[in-house]
Structures are given as C-alpha cells and as structure tokens.
Image (cartoon, rainbow, N blue to C red; front, side, top):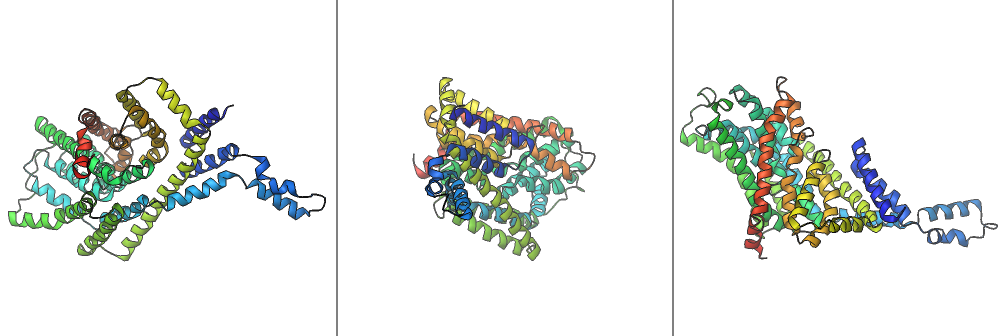
Length: 473
C-alpha cells in the first residue's frame, strides 16, 4: 500500500470506530500515534544508541533500557507533546471556559422562568404569543449559554407544560423549543465560532460580526413561521385566556421587563459589543461576561456554593473535552497530511471540476450528513479542517464558509432520526408527548434553516456586511 492509501485507511478506521461508540478524542489520539509511529518510523535513527552498544560487554539492563529508549525515540511522540502544548497555550481557546462558565452560571440564576413569564404577558396580543415568548426566551438564553442541551431541557421543563396546558398543538410546541434551543451555537457570543476560529485561523471578531445578521435572519424566519401558522391555523396556538395570561398594568409590566429581560439582554450586548467595537478581546469580554453572570446570580439571590461548584465542575469537564478533541485532531490531521491524505483529497476534489457553488453545496451536504452521528464540536475540530485547504482552490472565503457551517450545524440537532434536541426534550417531556410528534414539529424549522442558507448564498453581504463596515475589507 502507498502512504496516501494508508492515510485513507486511517480515516476509514476512525469513522468505523466512531460508529462503534469509541470515545472520539482518545480514538483520534490513538490512531494518530499508531499510524504516526509507522509514518515516522526510522529504525536506524531510533535505535542508534542501541546499535552503538557492545552487547557482549553491556549488561542486560543497559541493553534493555537502550532498546526501550529507541522504541520511544519516534518523532510521533515529539509531535504529540508539541501539539498538546500548542492547543493548551492557544489564546483563542482561553475564551471557551469563560463563556462556558458564564452560561452555566446564568442557567442556574433563575432568570429564565421570569423572562418567559414576562415575555408571555408582553406578547399576549400577538398570534401564537406563548410560542413567540418561548422562542425569544430560547434565543436569549441560548445566546447567553451556548449549551444546547441545557436550553432545551430547561425550556422543556418551563415552557412546554404551559404551552400544552394552553391547548397548543404538541408538535408545534415541541418544535419551537427544539429549534430555539439550538440558536446559541450560531448567534454570538458563540462557543462554536471560537472553536472554528481556532481551527481555521479566521479572526473571531470578524466571525462574530459575520454571524450576527444570519443569526437574526434565522430567528426572524422562525418567528415568521410561528406567527404565520398561528394566523392561518389558529387551532395549533389558541389565544390565551385571562386565567392563563393575566392582565398586568403597564407600569408593572415595564418593571417586570426591567428586572428580567433587560439584565440578560444588557449582559449579552455588553459582551458582544465590547468585542465588536474593539473595546476588549474575546477572552477579556468572556471574563466580563462570567463576572456579569455571577453578579446576576447574586442579584437574583440564586448564588449558592453548590451552584457555583456545579458551574465550575461542568465548565472544567466541557473545556477538557474540547481541548483534548483539539489535541487528538491536530495529531490525527498532521499524520494524515504527512502520509499524503490531504493532498490526495485535494487532487480528487479538484479533478471533479466543480464550480465554487457546487463545491460549497457538496461540502455542506457532507457536513449535513456528518451531523447525524456526530456533535458539532467533533465536526468542527475533525472534519472541517479537511475542507479548509480546498477553500483557496475554489476561491471561497473561510469567513463565509464558517458562517455556512454554523448555519448548517443547526440541522445536526434538528434532523431525525439523530436529532439530539428531540431526545433532550423527550427526556423531560410528559409521557404523552411522543418522539414522532417532536420530529414532526422540528421539520418546518429545519426547512427554515435551509431557507436561511439559501439566503446567505444569494446575499453574501449578510455575512460580509458588518465585518466590512466595522473592520474594512
């Protein structure tokens, strides 16, 4: 076998092991070191000290230790150490634990129940008011946390029972919560965009600016669908009665908005604004956000040592997962490239004689299919770097490609039969809510994601407009 063929076999073995359920980070490291040992194998160099020994004079211990030293004198171990150090000292990734900590603190600050109640009262005259309130709450909360499972679970416990009690169609209600909960991986400040920036070398500030309009467009499409369907089919979202949503004086409503909506909105805008206007680096802004989350928790009297401890533990666990995924991916991709796999894929794709649009559609289709078995973090860290060298060939801007990927990865949580948002919601939903009903409710929102991607293809200024306005070309 040639080295490029071995590289493709390496990729095939990895995909098989993923489907068998092996831990992805450690599978990447094991395959990278295993195939890398073969790729960098040089017996003459590795056992140079052992060959210099006079075996007739040398003791058993000297000869054995020299042979073992030679066995570990493979360059793949140097690669492993260097890549680990590179990942752990990456300044871009420093923002990840801080944003995660902000999200976990906000999640435990009892903000969401107040926010949903307030928005539900404020929008009661809008068709599908409870769905609109749930979607806006999901969008704000998802943006603050960026943790899809947490948003879907918490909103499922809070909003779903209220919507079902108000006689909302089960599929309609569950679809709103599942779709709204995924918005945090797209709308800044998004952890997914930080990970993409670290993998691609694109400026995280430009990524945040580029993702803002497409994110708002997607939220707008969701709201248009919810309100439009509520108008055309009133039975799916009956208007609330006074018992379900009481009349509140305007002064009291403004106070409720001031104490629930505005604190979270100000926290998000201060973090995002400080990044976009160059007042702080993403890491510094993340630190501000983490501090702001703790202040909110204290003001809402939700800060306890137990909740702080849980937030720190979950932050450390998730950060470790991301960092070790990066270590494994860097080792795997370095060996894959050294064996010629990357060059082989580039030649194959170039030989297809695709136009830039055809290449983008093919790449997004592959990422869409990868979203069924894999999490967004694994797709961004492992598979997106395979496409990055091809972008220059087809004249595709990595910023534009990254925003398309971020939109596409919404589908990884919404596409049956592996829609993780549906399973998160099913785990806490009432027993009468069936998984098939959740899948049925998700499909229209999945179509909205596809529409948003088409709009970005047709109007690329949705991506480039704000970065060019703030930072020039």
